[in-house]
Length: 388
Image (cartoon, rainbow, N blue to C red; front, side):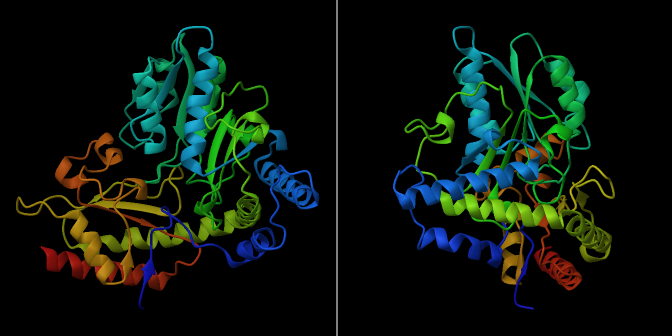
């Protein structure tokens, strides 16, 4: 076995059938969707059909779908767009979010705070998620938006999104959900979830990179983040990525059709990985992903290794050594790979710095097999023995 890829939370391989759906719009039907000539009109029709397909997967209206460059832009647009609109002509509006969010939410939150917006950052409870009770207590008369992720990208813990949505509705506050890690594995019907805004990224469910979606419920006032042309109903200027939109729509439809079967299969593989850790590690470890709970994603397992005999384990060297053995994993979010600081998610749930710095995230995908899990466990065991 030359390579076992267990980093699907960072990105997934492009589905060949998705690529085939995109090809005509990269080669022959290459028109700008804002042009009025024949090629432009063809591109516009394809773009709007893709928008309708995405909307159908979410139980939404096509007018509620904004195409972006990915999940990061979608998150930025949600936070900055809502607070910009809510602050027009008055005091800066407020935001409530969590210390365990993706950097695509935390960094915009920091910038908004610098600009005078009240920002409350909640600490997740011991299991790794913020509770509706915490949200209820944090909302005040200046809060315009709550932003919480559906599924944590590092530890797989899931937020009780419908319950948080009920709290937000009771306070007449908008609710944004970063669903990047949930798309393709969980039902994301926006009415059932109760969200007002929802972010997704195509490359997380076997679609292309460079394309994402922000769902914005009709009636939500949202200022633009990228200003320029009048594309995306004047909410996101710039030439439309027609091949990307078609690829995302194709990938999302396929992912939704396969979601239940895939989630069940990945859950079994996840249990196999967790069950094998005791024998593989042969020493102390911390399982940061709560085992065998319905509120946990089926594809993520995060494990950390406390210092042994007073000596901390070098987490970066562990990942590099596993890579040399053909096991491709990560320490957490690929967006912060290379950072010297330990994962902010792991420190937010209470791990001490030496332990949080020696964490590995295994994330499973469509191509993962039981043999892959067994091989990864074997190489984890031998690598830890060698390093210790």
